[in-house]
Length: 307
Image 1 (cartoon, rainbow, N blue to C red):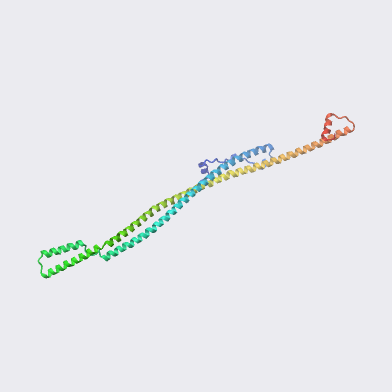
Image 2 (cartoon, rainbow, N blue to C red):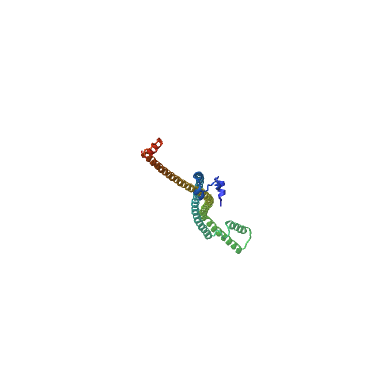
């Protein structure tokens, strides 16, 4: 299982240093001076922007890893489809091979039955019978035999000749057997060709299966890296959001302070106007009583609208 540290090192990710983060306490917010708060707002804004940039870079790397994961999954699916297609071909050749082997077995059974019917495998061979006939004829020609032995010898020769003739007749009729053997061997050869295809296609299917397994494994590894990169993105984004929230709080506090200062200035202006009005009324009263007014007093009266 990949770790965040390994992902940071492998993909050259800028680590987030907690020491660079900006803190904002309630005391800072409530009791800090306007100048202090303006400075803190700037720090929060700058750090927020840094963290947002960091989060964006991490999100980009995460998206790249997710894309690579999808590529590997697609690659695995292609190998799966090719494997399945080859396995279908393997099954087709297996079925054809088995069908042909069964046909060849039936033909070879017919060959054996035909041989038994022809009795080619039993009795003496043509060569053996010819040798025996030669021996008997030589004996007949060279030995002096009585009539009974002569008759028995002639009967044996005739019997051997009859068997020889039958054997030769059967051998002459073996064309059907030869054709059947040839057909059986051809069918067996065709079955062997299908068996060879089964072996070749099965090997290719196994290769695609192995490549599929490897692609899925690589996809899992990259997905783990993408998950870790996503956690790094969330870490930076949450820190950026917190800095933004604190920045907004400081801005709100500054607006409150601005509003308070404006209200204080309004009160001061109103108080000043009231004082000026009272002073102008005193000057006007003096004017009404006949006192001479200087230029400054006249300007005060004009300012308040009493002159």
